[in-house]
Image (cartoon, rainbow, N blue to C red; front, side, top):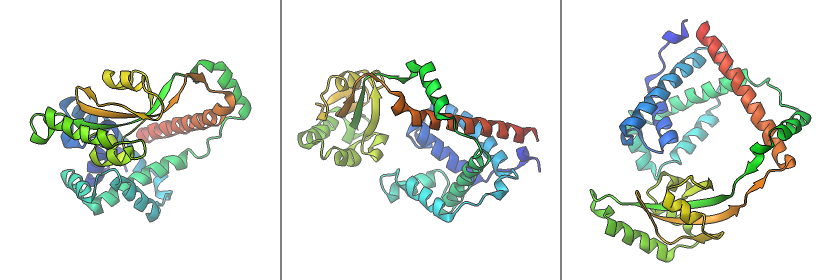
Length: 283
């Protein structure tokens, strides 16, 4: 069979488009602007070619995906939405239901497991090789100051009565009057209008210059485990929680060794997978 002529299930196409949009832009497909839609379509064109090739391969026929893995993937995906109603609304908007979603997740896992299978014989580098890599690339292990941070966003949009400048500020002020480091996650999950709300507002370890200018300047002036005053940006009002400060430093070899070995093994597997996929298109 010519793998390039094999049709990928339509439901899987809808699912991959939905998932890619959420992963890359933190938005559902209908919320993307023209430039984001263009980028999504470019990514999807290549992704669908790869999925088609992998799922049609002889190696994929050797792989079985346990139903427990599909169930776990389903639970994790549902957890990205505010509630079941929001989840079902997004599925419907993407022409999916739970049955077609489950089938799509199974296909996705089948593809991922096949790629793992064909690259599982890659060997990790030795501790000697890892140490040599570390000292040959010492600059890569110099870390700038970072701030572990979370935030809450209340947007301003005069097209909606509940999001006028005055009402949005009033809503944020009520939150600011009651918020503490102990309840910040609770308020973020229930009130923030940023996609990070699903992760309790967590922004991760933030480098200087990574956020909007107003937020960046405020965050890098804060003390550890403190909450900001209300900060205004072009998108609305924010509360920042500086959970901790990691000062500028150089990671020691002892700290870096496991990650060096892990990352090089990951790269080796990806290189082998890339070569294998390229060979599929030649056959």
